[in-house]
Image (cartoon, rainbow, N blue to C red; front, side, top):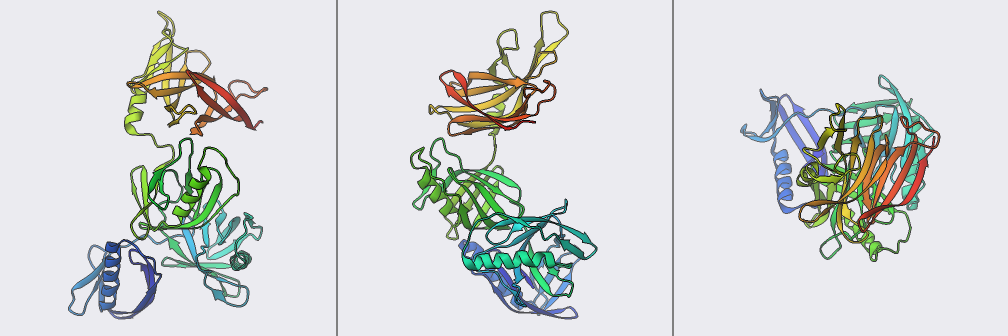
Length: 470
């Protein structure tokens, strides 16, 4: 029997005799959580040891009872994991020396078998990807495995090499309960895994504050820290200057991260950015629990102190969104030179007496931050259709001045495709696809990243980088 007792994972043995059941001693890891969780965990494990009989009631619940028939523990049935779409965390691997061994302490190996036939994960130090096919219980994993090239301690690198060598030898797989086993053609065990419940998989966050070792602090102005939780158990992001990566495990409110590996760039501005980065990366490895409240995630240490606070990437406060949907904007496409939206849209006659309408609407591309001049601002994109063949996208800066005031705007282009809008280091970064030199306006193919700076009441294009030009 194995499971999670609220804070720690546990495992042990059990015996059945008809409806009778007895559990042997259990062993588990030794992570510490807030006191009330530890009290709950102790009570749960004590009840498990007292159970002598079981039954499944009319509601489909498993009930473990004591010798007098008093219920001790009641469980609801959970959906069993499938090979695909599940994050599998390795519990052991074949070391190539004739046996299966446990993982090096503090390391994590994962495998995610995706529906498209790709296999991704972390191999203890690096992330890896390859492909696989299945036929019934048979499995074949391609030996052309691509991996990142980070270096870790020698024992971790040896473990990684042995694991990646074992994977292509897999011939069969079996799932029993929440466990997965890969075996070779002779039936020898190559790797064993447990399914990991992971509601964080595929979520992207921005850091709003963190514990610097002395207290909770917000980010230095003009800096941004991101965190992307991958389905393969890999956390990646930018810590303000350097990119970083780490393994993570999230399970019903518990969260462990580490070790963290980062690139080695040195940034000089703004002042204090390298110290902030070091403090943030250190705070990540102290996280023990997390809670999510709508668009916000709070993480805490084992002692209950706040570690890092996150906000969903691209989150827009509902009150701000409503204000933007009903604000007044500069517009070169309306007769008055401005437009006041109502619930995010506006229309008027293209010309007096014309049946053609000019339509303006707010897009979902919204980003808030501080300008290079230290002014709070929100950048938004409007789309205008004057009634002809063109569809024009414009970038607007809204500033709080007794309400929201449109202080600057600039044309992004005709029939462009906006991918994202962000405020980075005080400047507005627009990722979009525009018409290249040989493109018709209908069909843009040139991928560019444009950077705009708010200078007084003007938006100035300060950099344009062509990412891809078809």
